[in-house]
Amino acid sequence: MTGATIERVVDPDPSVLAELGRYDAEAFGQTGLRSFDLGVVAHVGAIYLLRVDGVAAGSCQLLRMFDEPGMFWVFGFYVRPAWQGRGFGRRLLSYVAEQVRQAGGAGLRMSVSPANRAAIGLYEGFGFETLRLAADFYGPGEDRYLMEWRTSSAGRHSAGAAAGLTGPEAPGDRRAGRD
Ligand SMILES: CC(C)(COP(=O)(O)OP(=O)(O)OC[C@H]1O[C@@H](n2cnc3c(N)ncnc32)[C@H](O)[C@@H]1OP(=O)(O)O)[C@@H](O)C(=O)NCCC(=O)NCCS
Image 1 (cartoon, rainbow, N blue to C red):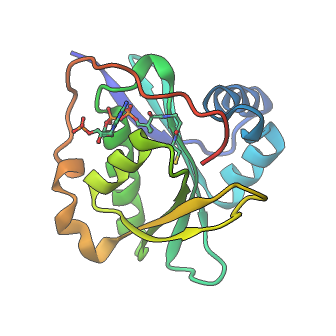
Image 2 (cartoon, rainbow, N blue to C red):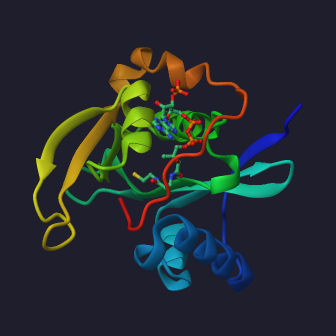
């Protein structure tokens, strides 16, 4: 039985921020967050860390949105390559959504590259809806879908809520940049 746990990273020391920075670079290359950025997110927003058998296997970074304070922006979301395709992404997303619901939040919003089929599949399967394609969202040619999930639609994310561990599958495509 795989022992998966998810915890919020509270008041991280510099070694933890450096470790999270390495994982961000692994997931997003040059557009990964650095330890300074991660310090901001940990102290001002929230960082959740998924561990499998005690080993860091994925993370989610949240910030509350200025113009819509009920909404939380998913700044980063990843499962590390060795743990992809085993239901951990769905499990982490389900946990984070429940934290937002318990905090009285209205929902989650994020940007996703149109090329990132694995992420889009995860989010759509969970109940996210695509709001629009935002041209040049992060700069020239960096178009992104904006996707949203609302706590009021929680009944529709049964696939996420029921997520358990499944057998190994082929790992998802590694992304060259931040989604
Ligand atoms: C996207 C990502 C988080 C998915 O995590 P994961 O743990 O591999 O996903 P899960 O095993 O929980 O799969 C959940 C769903 O995601 C989709 N999915 C996952 N991997 C996929 C792949 N390789 N191809 C297509 N769909 C895929 C499927 O819809 C899957 O549901 P199913 O198993 O019922 O078909 C992971 O691939 C990742 O971290 N990628 C690199 C970083 C990244 O792109 N982050 C997202 C930024 S928006």
